[in-house]
Image 1 (cartoon, rainbow, N blue to C red):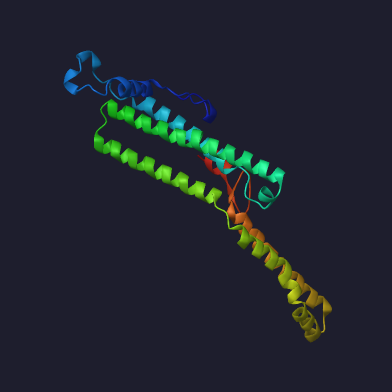
Image 2: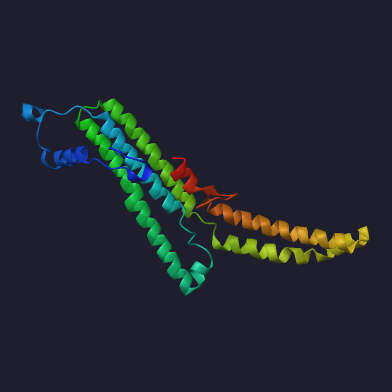
Length: 231
């Protein structure tokens, strides 16, 4: 059962071992060959709830670690040797966390459902549980897509160049505003605000490419708060 707080849950793998043994040794047996000594035990709902909660806790922790990984698709990750090495390390770590820990926990949750079916859970109720497992898997894959999606490098380069070189092209317009208003300060302020607005817009788009962050953030999603504290 689960003792103490969030980090001290203990898994009871008895039901999982029974299911695994059934899959390995009882594939060819029929119900008529069962002996009275092989009667299915009743479902221990408290033990099942503890095991499921433990799997969900580990799942949320693994997902939090994956989503909080740094970005590995910046320009220096492709243009420099140090960046390439850093990107390979980040990508390898992310795939390891997602494939072994996160997806592995989904498999364990699926096995817990199989244990319930082995102990007599009706098929329609097991099908409903499978549906919720599917929803969970789809949501995880959607978060993975958001985490790994990046704007094409050509569009990012265009946005950066556009942000840097557009204000100087409009310098004559800013000068005309200063002449019309008879205020050089006002013309300089208009030019500075225009440049600042374009730069802020570009940085906002770059930030939203990977909205997940570890710790407090104004423009992103605090995965530690959402998946470890509140969950």
